[in-house]
Length: 516
Image (cartoon, rainbow, N blue to C red; front, side, top):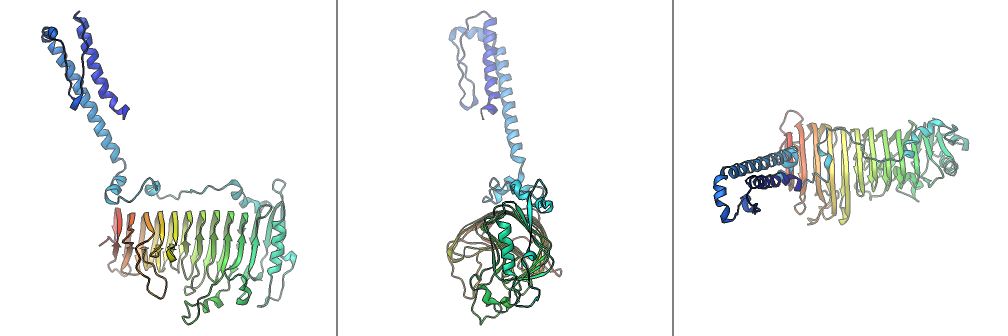
C-alpha cells in the first residue's frame, strides 16, 4: 500500500518545493508552509506580513496548486482503474465469491486449469527405477537374482485339489531375503493358491512378473484363518508387480452364498483378491484381474503408488466386487485401465489423499465413487481427488460422493473433468443420505462436510430423468460446488432435470440440466 500511495504524497512534496523556490527567488524571508490533509484538502497558512507578496505571486501559487491537485487526481484515478482491472483478471474467482461463497479457490487453485492432467505425485527415484530394474536382469550396474516359481516344483494335475501355495511361499522367501534385487518369474501356466501372505520388509527391490494364470482356491474352508484376504502383500517397499498375466479370484462360489444375492443367508465376509497393505513405492501394471471373491484390488495404508494398464472384470450381478478400492492411502495414480464389475469401478474411502485417475473406462458397475463415508458415526476424511478423462457406460452411477448421516469429517478439493457418460443412471450425484441397509436409517443432525467440488466438461446421456442430483445435508450443506460446461441429455430425446437440495453452487459456460 505504501508504494501505491507514494505518487500522491510526492505531488504535495513537489508543491512544497515549488513554493519554496518562489519565495527564494523573490529574495523574501522564507517561511515554511504547513500542510494538513483532512479530506484531501490543502490548507495554506502564512504570516500576515506576506499577504502583499502573495497577491503579486498569487497566480504562481494557484498554478502550482492546480498542477499538484490535477496530478494527484490523475494518480488516484489510475490507482482506482488498475485496482478494478486487477479485480477483473479472474472473473471466475469474483463470480464464485458472489455466487458460491463456500468455494475456497486458495485451497484448490487448479480449478481453472486447461484440463491437462497434473502429476502431483512426488515419487522417489527408486520407485521409477523399478520399471527398468526388471529388464536389466543381473547387469553389472544392477545386480539381481531371478527366482522362478517352477524351480520349487508345481503340481501338474490341474485339478481342484491342486495347491501351489508352498511353491510361491518358498520363491517369495528366497527373493525377499536376497540382499540383491530379485525377480520372481511366474511362467505361463495355471497355478492354484490358497490364501497367501507375501510378507515384508524385504532386503532389496522385488519385481513379481506374472505371465501365467493364478487362480484362487474355491474351497471356502481354506479361508478360515483369514477370511478377508487371498493374495496379501504386507509391508513391502519398492515392489513391482507386472507381466501381462491373469489373477482369477474364482469368486462364483462366494457370490452364490452372498446375503445380497440370497436374502435368506447370513451376511459373511469374503476375501479381497489382491491387497497391498502398508506398501511404499509400488507399481502395479499390465495385469488382468478377474472374478474376485469380493473386491478385486485394494490399496490400504500405502503410499506412492502407480497403477496402470489393468483390466479388472467380473459379472455385473457379482456383489461387492469393487474394481480398485483405496483406503487410507496417499499419493496414488491410476491410469489407462478398463474396469467392469458388480460394484464401484473405483472406490475411494477414508484417509485417502492425493488420488488421481486418468483414462478410465468403467462399465458395468456402480461408477467412480468417493465413499461411503461416515457409517456408524465415524469421522472420515478424503481430499485432493482428481478424475480426469473417463468413459462410463451403462453404470448405476457416474461420479458419486456418498456419505451416511451421523458421521463427521469432510470431503474436500475434488475434481471430476473430461468425462463421457453413456446411458448412466445417475451421472452426477452427491448423496449425503446414503443408507445401504434393509432398515431405514435414522434422521441425524451431524454429517460430513462436502466442499470445493468441481465438475467440468462432463457430457453424455442419462438413463434416468434426474441427470444431476445433489442431496446434501441440511445441517452441513454442500459448499463451493462448481459446474462448468455440463451437457447431460436424457437418453431417448426426453427431458433431463437436476435436483438440488441444500447446496451452494456456481455455474460457468453452458450447464444442462439446471437446478430447478
